[in-house]
Image (cartoon, rainbow, N blue to C red; front, side, top):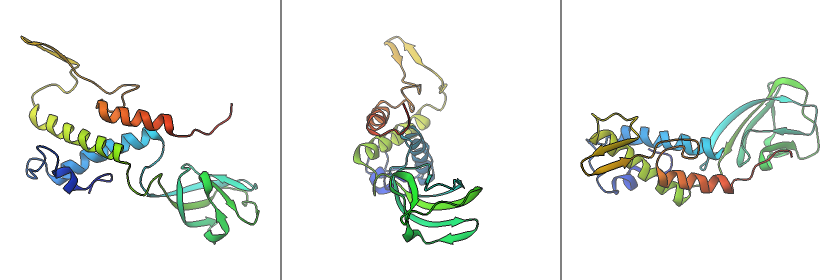
Length: 194
């Protein structure tokens, strides 16, 4: 099943009820393609996903994890020894002992498994945009098998049609999805130093 929507929701879209032409596996593959782009561009998952990271112990009070939207800690080991996750705080992707202890120094000695994701379910704007982009991709693959997919325009007796292609500010080439991504990129906090 696709991550951001159900197959039943997808099959309710115009022209998508034919599970023979648009097999579930094709729908899932196209949806996974767009989901990966969305999460790469936003820099974090929208829905809960499990991650395992191995990081270096710093001899300090904090460890930085790759994803800030941590929902729960599953397990933490330091040098192969389990740590009680109830004694840890992971707010904002910063892992610290609640009692103020420091992390044992070492290279790759801390392994953290956790669930991260900004929302419990995918926001409606992203869900809808990914669903429609998935639909459009499947339709274009089925209808235009003989046309070069790298085309930027096509000219006929009726005029020229220009195609939107992926680029720096258009990661997918699908305008509705690119707009939804751009809106989320602007709204996502960035951490760093000036």
